[in-house]
Image (cartoon, rainbow, N blue to C red; front, side, top):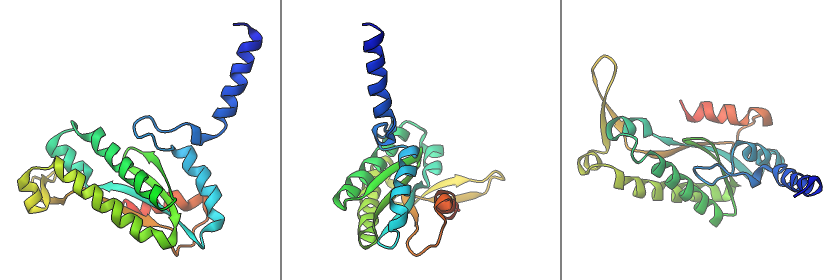
Length: 182
């Protein structure tokens, strides 16, 4: 292998590297934050027919406190897989921002059906990770710093969407994250 071959390899690598959609998130296989930004750029002019949604795994922290981190990666991969395969049915896009936070882009007319299906499948799958008592109660018992009992709901997919919002393109992710993670 000489300089010419190495240069050819580098040029090919840079060509592939220039498109963030070619570099998925290692844990989930979903497009990463750079790809999400690229898709927001692409769909922002189409917000009259499409919506951009911020989706997070709600109540995963109380689960981790009670049950530990043994199934943490498994839960994230199931959320990613269910969001991705459901979005594919609606010709949508799903990418990951960080561990528990995703972005979905799809037609406004499909969004309600998409999120209902993804959430129902997620709740069904994560029910396998809870004890029968917690499932029956519908919550995980936790405690605040002052020792008071706190009941936290079971895991679910929580979301906020641009549907009907007037947000500048560069503020979409911060605004949706703030609204979703309150």
